[in-house]
Amino acid sequence: MAELDQRLLMLIDDEPAQSRLISALAGREGWRTVIVRDAETAIATLGTRQGMQLSAIVLDQWVPGEDACALISELKSRRPALPILMLTTSTSPLLAVEAMRAGATDYLVKPVAPDRLMHALRSATTREAPRDELAPLTEKMPSNPDFESMIGASPNFRKALAVAAKAARGHGPVLIEGESGAGKEMLIRAMHAASSRAKMPLRIVNVGGLPANSIESVLFGHEKGAFPGAFDRQIGALRHCDGATLALDEVDRLPLSVQERLLQSIRKSDVRPIGAPYSFRIDVRVIAASNLPLQDLVAEGHFLPDLLEALSITKVLLPPLRERIGDIPALTRFFLARIGEQPGLRELGITDGALSLLAAYDWPGNVRQLQAVLFRAAVFCDGDALTSEDFPQLLNILGTGSSHVAGNPMQESSGVMLYTPDGNLRPLDEIEADVIRLAIGLYRGRMTEVARRLGIGRSTLYRKLSELGIDNAA
Image 1 (cartoon, rainbow, N blue to C red):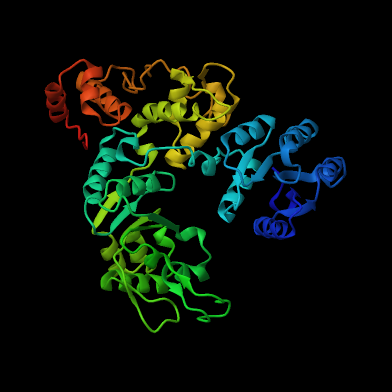
Image 2 (image 1 turned 60 degrees about the horizontal axis):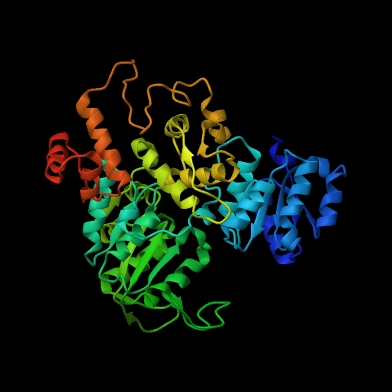
């Protein structure tokens, strides 16, 4: 990779405002940007001395319009190793598939968040595995916002679901802690769907995606003239959600001044817009989500202890995917079924070796990353099933000589480990427990179906759950 101060980005864009924004964002990380306004200039630039120094290309789909994929193919034919990122307002899976098959490295849905753009550029120009790649697209694939859609059978995950399901029926605040991509937003939607407020709107405010100076106004609203630039009166999210549910994602990024105001609103059940001499009574259920343990932030002085107490009437800890590796086979098959329903794609199987490879990676981006990696592999797969060769970046990271990657004879087809690391068979009760957990995850906690598929009675299943210490969270 080129040194940081030598990286050159070509931006193919005819919108001056967007061009200035992307250039400024890229500049923060040492990128220099050359802007071209049309496809012909872009192709010509590749052959120049400046073009030979390019490290990446960002292409706005609207410049070539319907010929975006043709332009990507042309650019790739001239510079095969050059990463190309496409900007688009479309969330169409078919367009994503066509762009990626044409040679696009990544697919960014506008308006693209600064962090998302920066991560896409970093991923495209380094050897790291894609983390949130295609996240905006894969997250928009249809799904049922309920607890049955939360796939997994590991004890810590089922315990988290059990706590969340019980809390969903209440009215108090809930705090969900878990790493980015672990499934916090999906759990929020499942809780809302199972709550008494399910017929009312759910509004999710991503604190981390807001400019720091606008967070207070977004949450509490403001009066006309309350501050420079407040040309109109604005109703805040808290008041908008009166009688409904407000979810605050990345609540750990709230400024301390806003934390104090939020604490008072929760305690008094009212909200006072910025610049207003009066308050409004509100009935809002607050569900907060944090990527970081808030108790640690309290200890560091970055989060108010009283606000943590107010938000965590119920606390749900979502485990990272690396702590529930046994759920990967069920998650993989679930995602592949959903991906296969998208236009331009088809449902695929997956080999034992590929499952072993997926299980060997530590997934820093968690479930969201797994889904995005599977989507990319499905786009380029020519066979009927994904193999380890369909995940070249993971093979590169883990190394083909690792005992954990493709072809490991210790991993049987279901993804349940039969052997201990020293080559001896595992105890029968441990294997049986893993098989039952796998079935619970595969059939989404429907215990009658689990019992039927395992060929045992429902009462026998529950007896085994008790004997083996499995919490089904049903």
